[in-house]
Amino acid sequence: MSSFKGSDIYSVDAKGRVSIPSKMRRNISSEARSTFVVTRGLEKCLYGYPLDEWQRLEGNIKALNQMSEQDRFSMRMLLQYSEELVLDSQYRLLIPQTLLEFAEIKKEVYIIGVLDHVELWDPANFKRYMDSMKKSYETVAESVLGLRGQEA
Image: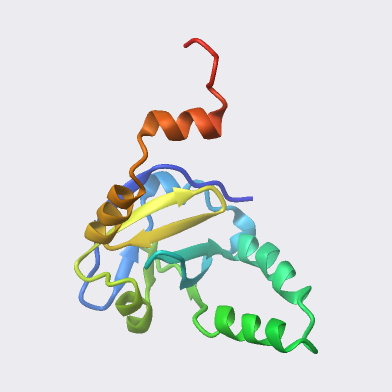
């Protein structure tokens, strides 16, 4: 099971290759077989799932009813943008141009570890996203980590 944390800014080379940060590489499980599934994310970013984590997610997709028009549409929407990519010897993923364009990633990419996957953002878009949320770190920590009423 993979587990990603932290963030880094990396360059995107002319071919569209993106390096996975070294601190995140060591958290890629052997079951992923150096393979990621990269797809459109939410809020104009890309999601990169190691293959083992993607297979868990795929279980949810497989549970959809293919006789349901809405479920078929959902499957098509989600899967049409998904690409299975293998890390090269320098731990880079060759991201398809259509996905880079969707996320508006050009010369730099902001990579965030989000437990079971990584997110790839254009740095300016990520900053705009964070600014739009108008929440402080303290507010989020209180809510998520349950720090209300506890003394540090």
